Image (cartoon, rainbow, N blue to C red; front, side, top):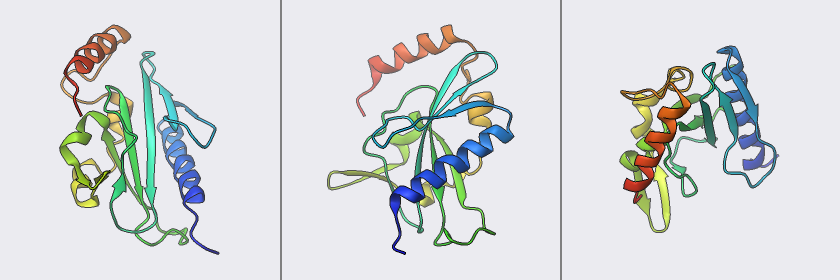
Length: 157
């Protein structure tokens, strides 16, 4: 059977979802083929989190053309290292706050790509989703609204 990127993507979304459930987070997978957000999480304090899952079977770069950096939006990069069919080996999972993407993204022609080497410091950073990211960590909906407004006024990525 030929490698199927749709199957890789679905497998990765449910793998990430399963890990979120193991962290006892309230998480929901989005349905559909053309969606911007793959998983929604609601923290205990009511703050919503969105997750975009990007996956690759090999050891390579990942395309991020459709990702918009936003507060409390994360990218879960799932890299199978050419071991997709080996169920005894877990893929590498990198949890990247989308606001960090401009710093680690390279442009090749019209494509924005993240190289696996630039993801090392984000490996298994599930606490970014469960606890928050950055100095303020966004603890309330009011903080989220305020910081989101500030970020939109500065964004040019």
